[in-house]
Figure 1 (cartoon, helix red, strand yellow):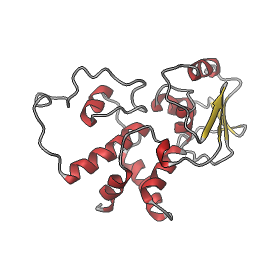
Figure 2 (figure 1 turned 90 degrees about the horizontal axis):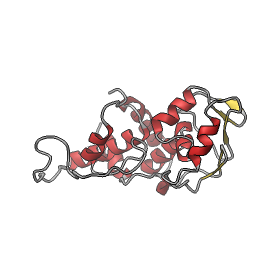
Figure 3 (figure 1 turned 90 degrees about the vertical axis):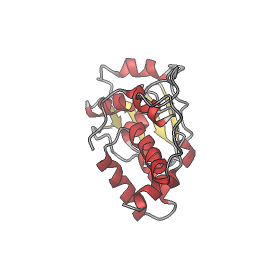
Figure 4 (figure 1 turned 60 degrees about the horizontal axis):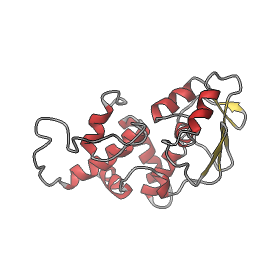
Length: 203
């Protein structure tokens, strides 16, 4: 399944929760029900599979991943030691494009990915244009001095509508430092990682 490029509000209404990486601010849900002609009617109780699928979709749309990319992260999480759900979230939070987004340099995950791809950021002083690059504790992300986006990104950091900078990051004036590895509560989406693990365990 390719990366989603369609209507964002439609996805948020379908999943019934805010997806910060997909849309900058919480939408005004004047129609707080799923899209489609049957959306306003009372929905039947979701099956266990449907609940697990929804949790997985929340994660995929927030980080802007294709199904194939997400499966690779799931495989890594399953192969590691410890809680697979928490390891999966940690791997996704450590992506370079996510760090750029959570530091406030970009309004959405898609904008953060574009910023990385266009070589506007450096990691420990070296240009990195791989959005999936895994950040480590102690790494520093900075806007390239020659980048035309630097001034705009620094101003974006001060936007009061941004998400709160997570505890594992220290961000100010175009610089972000990873202080430690992300924790479970660093993910700004209301989801249950155990249901995601169960979804892929049956695949």
